[in-house]
Each structure stands twice: as structure tokens, then as C-alpha cells.
Amino acid sequence: MIGVRPNLLPTPEGTPVGWGKPVALSKPVPLSKPIRLSRPTGLGTQLATSNSLHNSANSPQNWAASLGIWATSLSRFRPQSIGVLPLAAALLVTLPVFVQAPWVRADPFSATLTTVPILALGILLGLSKRHDHHQIGALLVGFAGSWLGGSLFWGWCRLHPIWHLPVESVALPLALAGLRSRWRLAGAFYLTSLLGTAATDGAIALTGVMELWPGVLNAPPHEAMVLLQAAAQRVLQPMALAVVLGFALVLMLLCRKLWSLGSIWKIGAVALATTLAVDGLFLMAAFMAPRLSGLI
Image: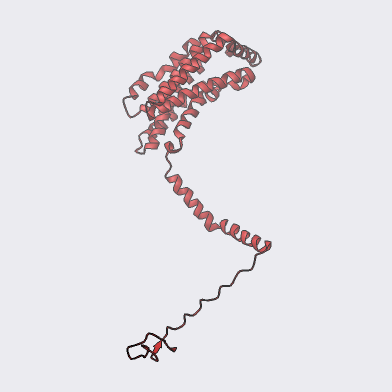
């Protein structure tokens, strides 16, 4: 488009500069494509959109992608990252009370032989180069020592409570030696479990419950329940309860001390704390539901 640019500044001769000279103006900028405003969507349209998104989320492709993400996460799994190792230690402390004791009474020979596969699996995992496998294996090795001692006592010596701690200490030399080797975790778990057993036996002896032990184990089931409830009631007497609470306080302080000694002894602290919790559950079961105590 050609236009005239006026310039009214006068020259010395009186004629405006540039007056009448043609000047090319820039071409007009075309308007962008008109924007079409969307109409308000109704409820039906919104529901259709929601269903479409829901269907796409549940499509096989999205499920496959989700499974791929889960598989990647599991491949990077480490027990210590979510505390699986302490949970495993707590579970292994619980098993002898509620699983091993009744099993040994029914078939002590098979229960004792179970030590072999537990120990074999523990050694196999413990020799692995993977740190997480080694930790689980070491934990199983320590548990194998506790399982062997418990099987021997509950299978053949259960009527003699004075022999409980000596028989449970069957693997004590190996556990002490393991503290200076790659099996430190095994030794720590076994020793703290044994310490919990010693504390339990000490409390039982000081509260006068140990003398009732043979009678409970020798009696028929219906009489054993009454005797076990009587033993639990004796523990709840003021003096006996003070003794039990004193042992519990000492164990809690010891757990706190062990927790500050590093990762290995943290597992020992968990084992000791679980022993305390299991003793409390045992006392509750003996008082309220003797059949669930594991002794009957």
C-alpha cells in the first residue's frame, strides 16, 4: 500500500521536508485464526470424559506400565530400607513361644531336626555377596541356635525349669565367637534372645511362679488351665508385680543402650524388646485365655 507521509517541518525555502514523497507503509498484519469459545459442557459430557479417562487408566497398556514400575521397585528392594530386618527379628523371637513349644510337645524329634534346614538356609544366604541376603542369613543362623536350645528343653527337659537357661545356652560359645567374625549379627541376635530368656526366668523365680511350672505341664488340659490362671494371678500380686515391672524397666534401659551401639546391636535391641512384649502377651493369655499361651 502506497501512502504519503506528511512532514510539516519547514525548510529554509519554506517547503515542508518530504512533502509529497511517496512512502511504503508496512503490510497489514493478518489477524490470527479466530478463537472459538467452547460451549459449556453439560453433566453428560463430563461423565463421558470421566469414563473415558477411567477406561484409559484401566487399559492393559497402563496396567503393564504399572507392573513394570513395581517390578523395578522390587528389584531395588533392600530390607534395611523399610525396616524388614527388625520385623524379621521380632517375628523370630515370637515363634518359639507360640509355635515351637506346642510343636515340640507333639513331636520333639521333628522339631529338633528342623534346626538343620534353618541353619543350612542361613549359612547359604549368609555367604551371599549381597548385603541384604547376608543379613537375613546371619539372622537365621542366630535363630537356629535359639531354636535348637528351645527344642531340646521343651522336648526332653520341660519338667525341670531350672535347666531352662543352661539348655537354651547350648550355642553360647559359637555366638560369642561369632561376634568377631562376619556372623556378628547372628551372635548379637542369639545373645540378646538368651538375655531375654534369662530375665524371664529370673522374674519367674523371684515371683514364686517357677514352683508351679511342673504342675502346669504335667496336669491334664482342663486342670492345667486353672493352674496357669492361678500362676498369672500370683504374678499380679503387688510384690510380684513390682518385681516384674523392675525387670521390664531394666530391659527397656538396656534396649536403649543397645540401640545406640550401631546397626548390629539395634537388631539385638529389637529382639530384647520383643521378648518383653511377648512376656506381656503370655501373661495376658495365661490370665484370660490359657489355651493360647502355648503351654497347654
